[in-house]
Length: 78
Image (cartoon, rainbow, N blue to C red):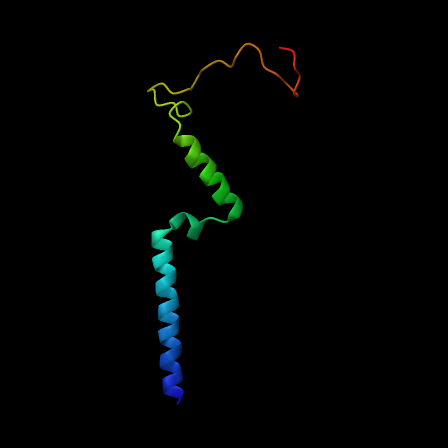
């Protein structure tokens, strides 16, 4: 009786961890990230799909001066 319960417990544990590893392999982003981190990851992932957002030039945007006029604090005048 005790041996049977021990075998069943081991089988259940192996099955649980096997399914957990399968899910983590199939969906690594859901398995690793928490709610807020997953949302931010999805935002970055969607932004990367737009070629106008990602700068693929060799120089990149390093050492580029900011625009002449900036709007601070939500002001409407330039």
